[in-house]
Image (tube, rainbow, N blue to C red; front, side, top):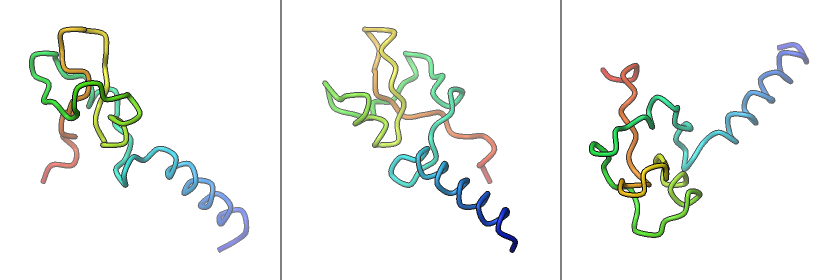
Length: 80
């Protein structure tokens, strides 16, 4: 493997490590686009966005009457 390819691979690994939460890939906007009535709670009351993201969940405070920390939609591409 030449030096440039090695550097590119190293950079890709470092960047991907910043976009993970508890070993899971960061969630996409589409996965977190869950209707408020369909959200399944993923955290306790008062959970912060950082705590929610660290659990691998979505966080959205736009609707004060909805669950703010919730499980994402499953990724259709990963279904067997």
